[in-house]
Length: 403
Image (cartoon, rainbow, N blue to C red):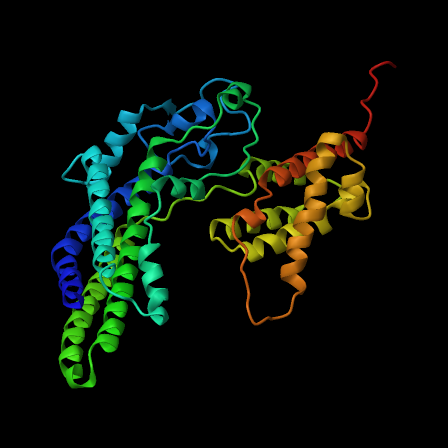
């Protein structure tokens, strides 16, 4: 029966795995196309925002970016268009250069996943006829608990938790998944499927080797070693093929443009206010906001936490307060809730990363850990309001025309 297991692994590696690689190449093409289309998207999943793309799926410049804060409350912005699912898919298919339709590609992914699951069940059926020693249960358990997961779970990594907008109609419509993100989730999920499959084959091979050693005596050891060596060489070839494929995928992939942490329009407004000789120098605050956007885009989340903490320490004088705790406690109820979240949660997270010494084991921050984007957006808005109020109060009175 062990010999039957070896034959099944050899057959899968020789005949089935190459088919999976074809699907993986198609997946990399679709992912690259989706990431290009993403650059032309509104970056908002709220209602009608989710289907808006710039011009003919072109990346807007800074001036023409979709303003999520105002949404469509002032009408459709120049250059932006509501695109149907068929239009988005047609563009992705055109960019990807696939020789099959996108619907056929999705079916291809499903069929490939079924081949992998059938292979897993076939191996498990054979293992049920073998007495697996207790000390080998770990590898057996890994095989029996192997799961490919779902493409739908991949979507969550693309979506931001809270989106702040004045567009009530978009808010009332709820969130929608744009077509290009759905296809991106499918394509990147299959890339993960291929990695998991490679690990499954390695686990099965390791278990076969261990069973050979247990069930064959020393007199047959040379025979056992020869068969296992053939299997290991085949798996090594498969892994090498997987690495070559990964390099191909990396060359085809285009980095997805990350959303800004601070709205560019807010940073520009601070730049404009700086020109009016405000009593405080805003250059450091502006630079901190720009560096936060740069760190967030580069996924440098440790830097994001530390820059966020620095901003909270930097801005209290604008509110005539000695520290940010005082700023938070002196705001109205709605703002107070947002500010207190910064004052408690963000400060605690940042202080943890700033002051803890090196440990035997570390856990690096994720995007979710530093996602205080709505709260910082409210803070920046209030900073702008305070600056404008201050500038109005120090303007000289108008000259009277009365003699």
